[in-house]
Length: 238
Ligand SMILES: [Zn+2]
Ligand SMILES: [Zn+2]
Image (cartoon, rainbow, N blue to C red; front, side, top):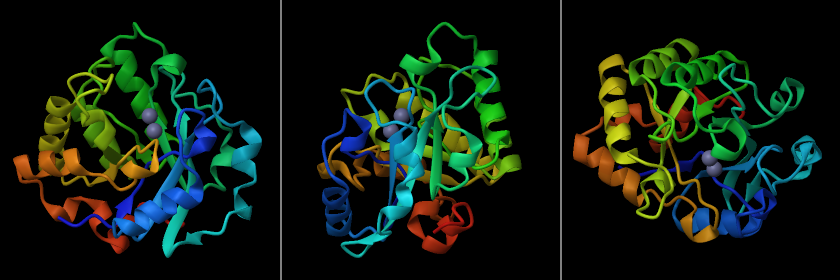
């Protein structure tokens, strides 16, 4: 499987990431990617950039080092109602929007029913293209509902390479991904791949994701980051 796109990464602007836009584009080019999404953490994440960062992205050239850059955000799902931390009139102008649950923003102690409601309500919103790392056992939920709602709403589910790192703080990620992939195959629901790189060395790094896809023999036709036309069906700005 050859990946030509990475739909989730971060630059210095996220506050706990370490490379510039140019360095990320260079690294993506070196890995043979055609497109790279730079999805900075949205404002409620401690230490990240503010609202104005996301409102000024039209100044950034969209092709750098021969790589098409998608300038977007990784918004925070704040609660079980699916409240997001960027307004819709900002989201609508971004090239790509990933929505994720993060401990500092969503908190702990929610029930599985609340967790799936958070994802379902998020997927029903306009401008959300991708659910980021729906693999974290610290926030358990029913994967069948997730996958069926993704199909109904045209939302992509992400395979997050960073979640599979041995030192990741997320738990049960490989097992949860395999559960999700089984259901995606059953319901014919495509997935995307995000490195979630916080440094240039990891841009387009899908080492762990590739292993999982090969392990379960997941069909390439359902991996949107192996074909630009396939990806474009879900990311119209591309
Ligand atoms: Zn995240
Ligand atoms: Zn991220």
